Image 1 (cartoon, rainbow, N blue to C red):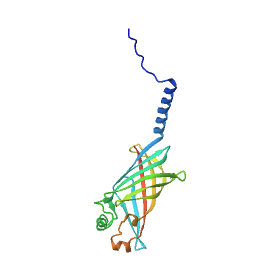
Image 2: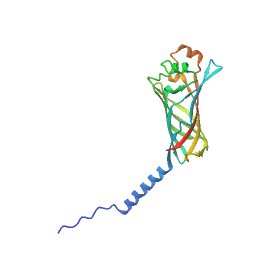
Image 3: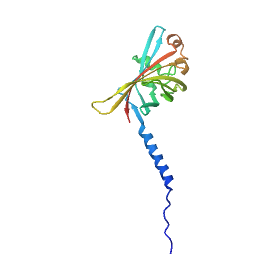
Image 4: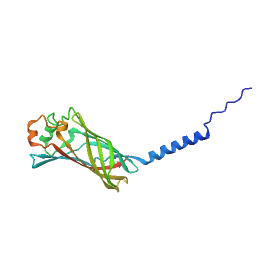
Length: 202
């Protein structure tokens, strides 16, 4: 008469470790949250000196992005911008900026930023270092993010968070306008970045 095989059971101590592992995994996931940029209520802008005393301001009007938080602190940022969406409120200039004299939008349709480190400076301020890819060139830049607060949208009943992000990049580092002689005279090298970001939890 054959004896019935009893199913193998993990030792109780091992079962406890496995249980604690999954509990820890659940708690970690519960503390982490993902947020997406609301392009209807956000703005990505820039400003560059024009003949030293003037200024040209513009925006990129098509983009997407996500923020990751852990225990309500930013841990990662990803932003992708449509290069051809540049808007300086002057159509002819914008068309020129899309050419290979400047951004080369056809060859390089996207500008992207991916954070590599996030340092919390105070209760509402962060220093964000990451890789900026533009015109086929990738270089590190450092940005500052300030948390402005949150609110519940009265219509959609979802929570929104608001950040201001600022920074400076060097135009010539990304070869923007360096092969167009008039740009060397007319445009400054330092470009100020300012973005007003609203986030919706995924």
